[in-house]
Structures are given as C-alpha cells and as structure tokens.
Image (cartoon, rainbow, N blue to C red; front, side, top):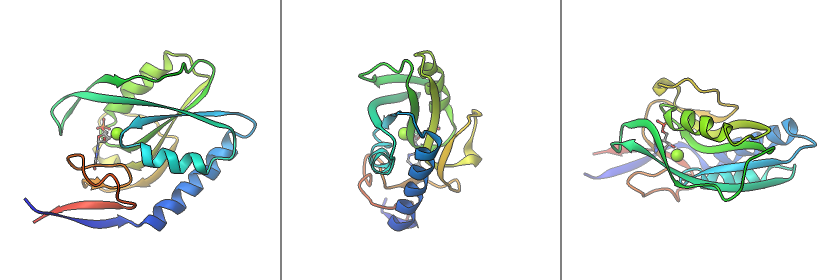
Length: 174
Ligand code: IMP
Ligand code: MG
C-alpha cells in the first residue's frame, strides 16, 4: 500500500512551540535543576531540541519501554526494554514523550517512576490526542493537541520510518 505524508505542523511551528515550552520550563524551575527522562525512541528528537532551550541546569537519561499486546492496541502493561542509568531520588524529573494517545504507557510509567522517590515528577509531551484517552493522566506541558490521526515525524514513526522528518505529518494511504 502506497502512503503519502501531509504536513500537519511545519518545522517552523514545531520549533516555535518547543522554544515556548523551554521558556516555560526555565521559568517554572528557576533556581532548580531539571532531570529529563526521554522515552525512546519517539521522544528523542523532541528532548534534544527542548534541552537546548532550557536555561536552568539540565541533566538527562533515557529509557525504552514496550507495551504488551498488539502493535495497535496497547494493553497498559509496560515492559522496560532499557532502564534508566541513574537514580531519580530527590531530582526534579520531567518525562519527555513524543505523544500521549490512550495514556496507558504514561500512566504506568508515572506510577513506576514515582516509586523511585523523585522530588517532583512532571510530564512533557510534544503531541496529545485527547480524544483517544483511556487512562486519565495529568500532562504538565503539551506542545500541540491534535485530532485522532496517525502522525509521523520529529521522532514518531510508521513501521520505524519517517522519524527523521523535521515536521509533523499525517500518513495518508492511497
Ligand atoms: P499510549 O500508551 O496509547 O498513550 O501510547 C503512546 C505511544 O503510542 C506513543 O509513545 C507512540 O509511541 C505511539 N503512538 C500513538 N499515536 C501515535 C501516532 O499517531 N504516531 C506514531 N506513534 C503513535
Ligand atoms: Mg512513545
């Protein structure tokens, strides 16, 4: 099946929004240090761009999770594929995600990371599809709310492709 990518959010729009979130985080955490937790692989582009725009001291770490269940329907039980290298104890932690869909992954992750004793724990996502939410979660920083369409680019993939697009696009099938 052939597919085309239609631009939903241009590179410029995304960059401007990330700058605004970076400014907001720098303000909210003034006088503190933030520890960004990037959820691989989708969150990687967003985290790098965001980290460059935060002016308080920043450290970061990576984790990779997979949800049990089929490709399209996550079960809500998350398996850690790669855990963090460093402890979260007494740190101001911000989880950086590419997109919140059902909310199952983040809901599980929040619970798990909370048990590691961070001083605070917040969520920052580039995209949010609120219409798809199954698990209620509180997102602290959102780049864009988008309609229920499958998107790629800026770290997001379709069958592992298109992560490198510098904009957010919708996948259209012929
Ligand atoms: P959730 O547990 O349903 O919130 O799943 C969120 C995860 O599903 C994200 O971190 C993405 O990896 C993936 N995902 C959800 N929607 C999309 C999309 O539109 N494009 C690409 N990946 C998506
Ligand atoms: Mg993800």
